[in-house]
Image 1: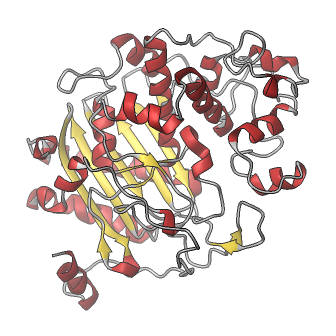
Image 2 (image 1 turned 135 degrees about the horizontal axis):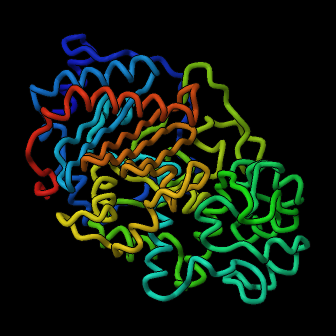
Length: 431
């Protein structure tokens, strides 16, 4: 059916925008092969475009396609949940244009900083188990990461003041004064005279040698590195790797079986993972490992895997919806964290304070989580009326992180027109 539909698209019988992109070579590198999905990917196998073929919502579909045409987006996935019921889930455009694969809801994509929400839930799980407190310090003799490998290079004693909560709220003292260490791997390699891309322990030592930009808790500055530290805290306390802990203690309990840490190259992708695209004329960049090789920005410009809990997860929009349903405090789907943790994560303090994991929460109960990487943009919007809209794309735009503002506007205008027309069904039951 997908093959027939793609032929119709190409012939003009069904209209979709024709977009033009630079094609880099994605031939598999030596020792490179597609990753395998877990066996129990039921949600992503059973929820298909056909289940949301609603004539009353064709206007919504056209709005999404217009949005994609405007921003030259190859593929997108939209899921809408109401009171823990998945009422609409659809893919638009291409999952992999060169291989004639149309986007389906079950396709997984990099979700960038939406990963931070998953990491924050992992921290709350450990807190509920009595394994840590949000007031625990991170470094120093009584800190969680107390290994002398780290503490021996610290010269700025303000590091010893950093708490787990300050990492969660981006208040730990890290800025981009020396560049974002998660997105400047080549410079870290050159400055520290490394032979290749640093592992997490090496990167941490490189960063700890430099002074903090402000005293922890006195200001805020969005920090990807802070969420890498949270990933390392999870590993230290749990005694297992970050990905395994999160899958076993967070995602699987939420009913999400097909979420993994992303690879860096096209040939590292999972079986049902999309292909990522840049905009026309986006130039090739030097690979993150300082090898001198030039690559597409979305396939080697940055070390995506190394982002870990700061931005490395791949997921489908239906499974993201299922995850949100498990941390929203509503009774229809059991929550995986308790009411106190949900309140801590979503409470509004003031305009200057980041929520825990969420990028923004408002006094009226609206919660937002955004994410952007080369080749993807993701937005999760949870509204006070119980609706949650989630969109992930497989294409970079020139707006970069600002793209989610336009997606948010699309959600707002579309909700005004189509919320009342959303079907009364639950696609989660299709499992």
